[in-house]
Length: 274
Image 1 (cartoon, rainbow, N blue to C red):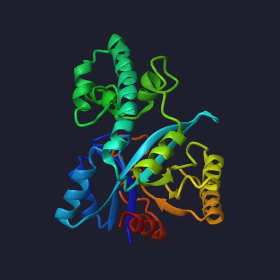
Image 2 (cartoon, one colour):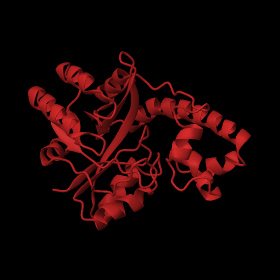
Image 3 (cartoon, one colour):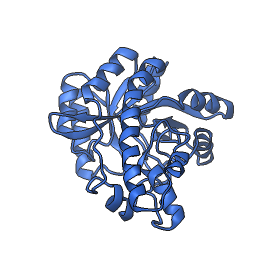
């Protein structure tokens, strides 16, 4: 069973449209694909419907951008089979709004120093509910300032250590988990090694707040994977995996299907979705 359970489309910060992503998943022989856009469920109905049309199994999902304010670290939460889409989007729109405001201000600062038109950035983001990093860089790529979308140029001019960076006040991780409990869905912590959130994973597992952990991911180290497996075994969590596919709009590119989910994780999610 080949399943990539972590992907993004143009509804957030991916480069493939919903249908193009699903077509590609079928073309490379995946059995299942989960569409998990950042902070939006806008593509879910289209993804599931189109998957049925072409005979591709699509698992609906969303990836929450949150923060553990106790440690100060970012935490990404994958939710599969969100039930109350309106309830989810009402909550997620707050994140989209604050991200848009922050990124727009950053775009204004970029326009003060470079010959970039903010309307060109907004055009790049037209299919999305907000402005993401690679949208800001598409006009710069066209102008020849950078050859890739998330590059050294981006880090210098708009990255976290740049003078233009504006921190986004993401919701607390417990707010997202409360919403998942309230609106229906199954919670998995995404790439916990990347944000050094393994201690938080164990805490959440003890509290019964999560059902799974993402094991196979390009930014989990081998040491991370061993600790993830230990936590999952001790607390009865299932393990998942995915490429975190964005196309070229990421610092390290990985083709769709490069990282796959263990079969038991797919089965656990499918069982919940029945």
